[in-house]
Length: 316
Image (tube, rainbow, N blue to C red):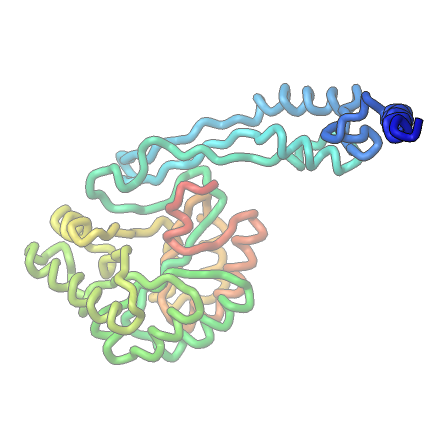
């Protein structure tokens, strides 16, 4: 009998094991109580569908860069479309209510950019872009630049300084100061010639020599060229393009070189500022005294102020 005892014990053990173990248990199956899955309710479904439906009203197609008969080379503008999922998440977190102020947009680039167009001067940004740019042409006025920089810094404004090559050689520390404060530096020819009267070789030397000087000071080669007194020819524009540069003019003149009163200069800004405007200035007593008020007026009209590079970008 003893020799069968071990088989009896094994049989009893097997019965106990099958009694204790749940044969339906799956070790790879998650406990539903441990899984947190958000199941959309009817109200969130309705919110999503409302966003999806109304998003169609906010879609805007991109606009290509083009050459205008009057304003010449004109930058394009990104289109936009609503990111439905991201907008849904924001509104869901905001008491689950539809609010078009919380729309999240994706920008759609145009097919034709400024780089795709032939050489042509640029006067303005896109006519629907709520931004303007200060173009500060520098051939003199070094005594006013530190104060101008202080005002720009106070109001968190970045400007574009078009600097003459000869002046830059004599005032390299000021050029460095402008660059270090995050402003954009452009080319204003070497010694303020009438560019329209120059040969191709002379125009090339004026622009290229200034590029070399500014590069030696800042480590960057300018991409933007402002002809002195706004005088240019097709040869000048093409020469700049051959140097991978755009020729920049302006749409609003402060006439600060005439030394007007601050009120006269500020009123010109108030009356003439527009979307995509380029505002011509110089480091003069008038522009220095009136700069803060000009900035205030432009911002009160709802415009941002940026560099020419920012203004001419396709960003909305």
